[in-house]
Image (cartoon, rainbow over all chains, first blue to last red; front, top):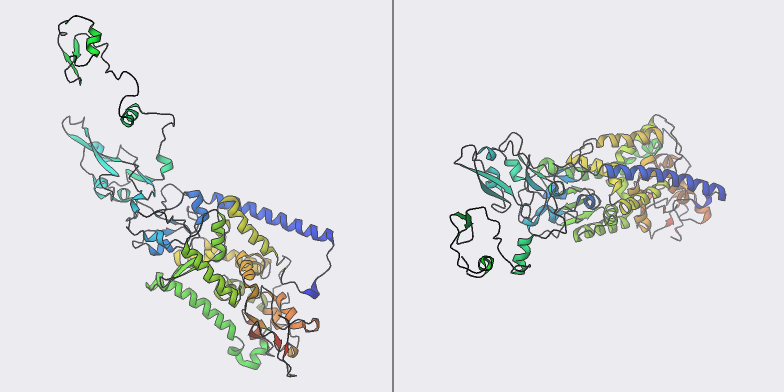
Length: 284
Length: 298
């Protein structure tokens, strides 16, 4: 190319030139095929390897990240690592393992600020908006809360306390009189920092942070939840908005608040159409 | 290329060992110095520069970014941020002025590896093929840019020995040693100067950047050349020497203008006749014993 020495330039036949070009193109094409396939195969990230806050979706991340390690260096807690050749992580890309050391969720997000390429998106301004993964209580059999024991470590350590993980009280059928304090993760607030998995007291964590796409279900788009629609509309969307008052078991009737059934004889017949009366305002 | 065990012997005799290895020593000192600056952080906690050659931050203020890598990242469909762009511009301007492939011979951590392979070849008279075209690197460069655009993954980084070695030294090597060893063996046994001179897309890219570089090696005393061929024997890109050294009859200036000259200065070291020296591009003229300074077209 530019180095070619003018007096060295040999005359090349058209056939020779085209042949050389074709050979090189074929060789380079093969190399490209191999490299392309390998790099795509080598881009998969195992589920327990988590990306730093703000990381683009995995397929974009492996294009955007230039493997400089500045996020690793600017992390004040030294919990980020760069994948080494031979590890299960795309070589040179940053990751952390929640069970070993979770993200401390710095308010100034220094890892994102350090990124020169937007592989860690600079659109992330509030660390609470980070979605590094999603905590899931994957094993109810070993989580001791389900045995009726008070643990709640994951609940207390959660940096988005009471919002990302809440404790739901349930009846303890074993003792019959105690409560189970069940940790429940709320995906709309969980940042996937991994604190719960790091802190879980079990030998193997019962709560794990996983990539959201592995754990999230999705309701059919055509679903309309009636009670939500009604709330949004401020009233019933079907007419009439009548309470269901038919087909009561024999010997039962609604109580006055309409909240339950009471045993007892039917109210005296006041005459007229009973159905009309039951559905009408102020009946019962 | 000619293999010459005795390359540089005459220069050592006339100038002494130090005098005949000045630029080599300066280069090794620079390479080690740069590695040391990067290592001071992880080893001693002194953070003068952090990151690696892909992107780094000097004293928490000056960003430096590998422009080729940033280009690949951008081609994969992601716009870089300002610090990345500024860092790439700084690097681009720097190498555009002092010679693109100065990166290769003064900074790149693979250079000592391939230099070692070439030294062993000279020392033990290993004759190794060199049939692979030196233009192949432009194809690989094209490939390294086309793959991110086509697949969204910066594919070259999955095999790039340069970044693997440099990153590995500060962040953990893993199996990257194997890739470095492969480059060494490839250069030593398969194709002489095979990786840096024929395959590496970074070298190709930096060569193109340095098209108009101001700092060049110039064969200012080419009329003193006694055709010992030592410079050709040690040069990693020997094709760049001939137009400058032997081109006077064709009206070519003494300055080495081939973009793949790495400005390593080894030719200056090994020449016992002091034919070569570093020069500025504007000064493309002969300095000859006849005492005539002849300006030449640049």
